[in-house]
Length: 156
Ligand SMILES: Nc1nc(=O)n([C@H]2C[C@H](O)[C@@H](COP(=O)(O)O)O2)cc1CO
Ligand SMILES: [Zn+2]
Image (cartoon, rainbow, N blue to C red):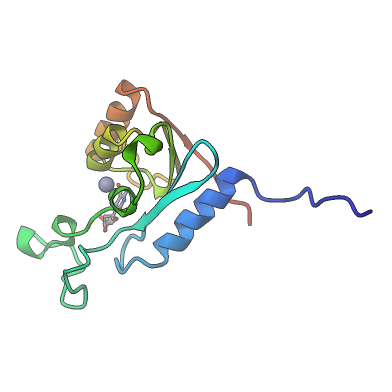
């Protein structure tokens, strides 16, 4: 009888690869972010990526950064983590203690939202805004709320 395969990918890697796949749907030309929320039983609850509200035609959308807030993408895009929560069809009580896998460290607005949704842990790939004011506030929020965060890398 053949033995079972043992070189399978870990749960961390599996959920992060789902997040990476979601990020490939992003229309943002500069930063594509994906998020995958998994519960403590290793079930995927939801997935999201950064994009405009679906009713807003993203072909007519200014995808750049602009001094004029009316033409700055940051004021229109819903972040990947927020979309993952909004896409969830289940009961929020089942999100308690879940882990969010996100390809980029959450901003401080998403940090607040994730905490309030009951997320228990943040696992991230990249932290390209490490040390910026927003990033420091985000880490402060997570630390003060007792939400652990850790960085992982994907195997080749
Ligand atoms: N964790 C995050 N999740 C996200 O979905 N985003 C989104 C918002 C924008 O669409 C894009 C950031 O654009 P830029 O400032 O790097 O050109 O990524 C950004 C962050 C960073 O905190
Ligand atoms: Zn955010």
